[in-house]
Each structure stands twice: as C-alpha cells, then as structure tokens.
Length: 245
Image (cartoon, rainbow, N blue to C red; front, top):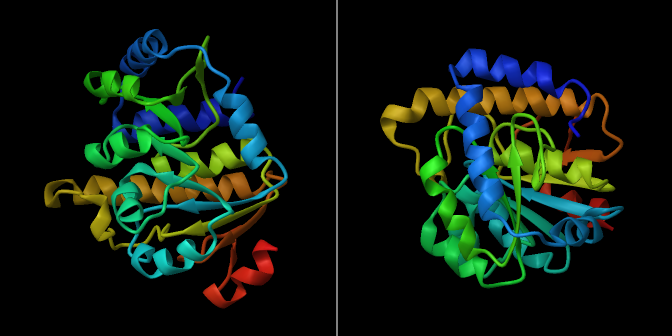
C-alpha cells in the first residue's frame, strides 16, 4: 500500500536524478530475502500512534539541538542515520533509525544491539550494503517503488523526510523536526564529500518539497525547530516544553 499520489512523485524523482526503477526493485528484492518476519511494525505503531515524535536530521542546527534532545529522554525519537554518530556520542539512543546504510557503521552496529528499530531502505545504489541489515535485531524494509511481502513504502526520499513520512503513516499526534534545515549549507555530520555537494543540495531541496506536500494532507500537527518549512510551524527551543506536553 502506498500513500495516494506517491507514485507520481516517485517517477519525478527517477527522472530528475536519473535513477533506475529496475535497480530499485532489484535492491528491494534482495532486502526482502534478507529480512526475517517480525512484529516491528506493531512496535513502531505502539511507539508513534497518538504520541509526540521528535525527528532528527544531520543539518547544521543539530549541534545546538543535541542538548535539548538530551532533556527529553522519554519522548519518541526517530533519527536519520547520518545523525546517529553525534547522537550516540552524546548518549542519545533513538527509538527508530531510518537508514539506507550510508551512516557510520560503528554507530549503527552499537545501536543494532539495543531495542531500537531499524527502518532499512533499499534503493539502486545500496545493493551491496544490504547484508548489513542482518546485524539489526529489530528491522523492517522499505522501498521507493512498489511495496511487496516484507518491503513497505511509507513515502519519502531521503532518510530525513522518510522519517517524517513514517511518523505520519503510524499516526503521530505531533511531529517536531530537529537538525533538518534544508538550506544551502550541509551539516558537518552528514559526511558529504565536496564532489557530492551539488547533488546533496538537490536531494535536500526535493526532500523539502515532499514535506511541503505531506503538510497538505497529514492529520499530524507539524513543527520545526530548524529552518522554516511551509506547512510546519516554526518554534524556538523555549517553546518545546509547551508543544511537547
């Protein structure tokens, strides 16, 4: 099952970035063969439904966000994998990690031994990394293409916006963004090479456009402590106690 309107946006992504739908499907088939059946979906639903969820990216504002995130130990946190290393280094273990396996492997291994749930994404460029998913105790698989068997599609393009689409799908009450800036600067934690800077900024722009689209139909209340995004209410760190309660 895909959210209404996703297929159109997926084909736009394929065209813009010259990706291969065939390779996306091949990667999804491999991930499906690796994953074991689990009740991770039920665990995710129990964590997210009707709750406030903090979504963490690796944008420039992550450094200032970390002290605030440490304060909210009992609030559900979903993190994009590029934010994992600084989070782990600061004693923050996300409840859910959304990853295409490009993040810091040591940090992913460390969290893989915890109760955290991994949402591993299969796409045409990470076919050779998918075996890494075997290291995670709790894991589900996703694709940008047509879902099947154990592979699902909640919507989204990059790890960060896929995390927001995931929270929307599992019916979060409130979604608050941290370290998701979508500007012309790339956060120091993203580990983006200089030669990849241009394509990274294009991906961020596409991710932002998808979040704007999501805001037009979601039932979740949307907030951001990062760069202002249409459809998300911009809040300061001082507002957090009021918003989260």
